[in-house]
Length: 494
Image 1 (cartoon, rainbow, N blue to C red):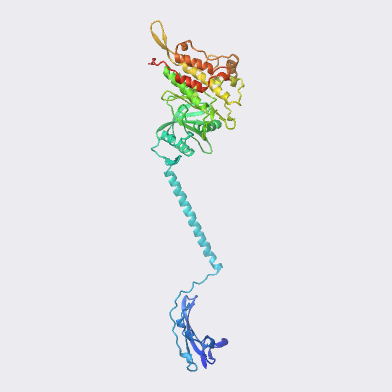
Image 2 (cartoon, rainbow, N blue to C red):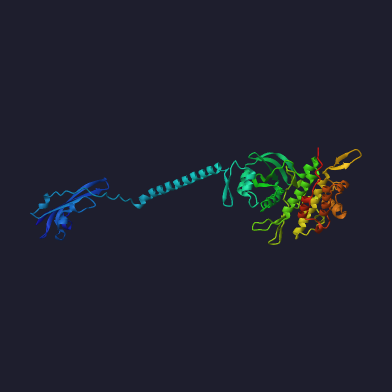
């Protein structure tokens, strides 16, 4: 049987006719083909002879079989060329044709663009996050978190310095470093209140509270570092030790300020206080007992998991002792202090070039016989200096004197130890000659013998400045003796 063929002729013959084998059929097919150039679907019709192995109901009723594109086939075998007049109809396609693929060399610019946009987005998000965190940090500059055990406390405007110290100094080692630096940045200097060889002391304010700021010279970096280190010692805080608040280094490329912030005491140093005031027996006992108590706390080692090392001051003098508003003393200036590490039996001596105040140096320091391997030697050197400070106190204590007409009050003018044998700024050699060679000690006034407090202090100071360090009283013994003393409270200063 002859069949009409077009687009599907056997052996790629020209359009025309083909011979269907016995048992075979003629067919006409229609198919929907997507043209990527025009972007539309086109209809493609073909005619030909159906091979005998492909005949069948499902093949000739192709519209019943789902196809990726619309397609339909009809068959016939009634007569020659019967398929020429068949018009099969296809159903609309049931799926969307796959998108056209783009060659790799053409896709590279698109990939690069996508990667660039992604990176830009990531960088933008990072910048936004950084600015946000910076804003939050400034916003919460007054809400720095402290840790006390398992509780959290925060630094807000409602907290005073004493609140912060009470909350965060359970170990007695001072405020956290982050809080110290924050306080140092918020300090407002008011005016200078004193100047010495180490630097200058300023009255300042932090949120309305008065504080003292010691500004060290750049050449005194070792003193600043040592004093800060001593103040950060565990269990260092004591009522007769100057209250430490913060330490920080501020500056730019051209200048540097080393700051040490502490409690402010309006009455100033013991030196300034004694120069301008006289004291009664009760005040004298309080001054002397509190000074000894502060030194005893320094000298005492506290054992424990977080214990306190024994500390020797090495520069005890009336200028380094402050007078509090309650009449007690507070020891300050630890730039020359040394610590005793009992676990290793070592003495932590700072390489500071300062050697203390020559006027208050004990004989063993002046003649260079002090045993630097023995920590007790440093403590006994402190006791010698404390004895001289007691002498300064006693000169300014008033006592009653029975004159010709009536009882009167009397006291000596303020004077520094050895004021009558060495100049105002004595040299090392001058002090060595007076203390070691001539063995001179400050004179004991006769009137002190008739007053219980002055008499007791005169005996204590003479034992403290003994030439032999081994026989000097300890700070703890001096503290106990003075605290048990019952001063004469009948004298009032008008």
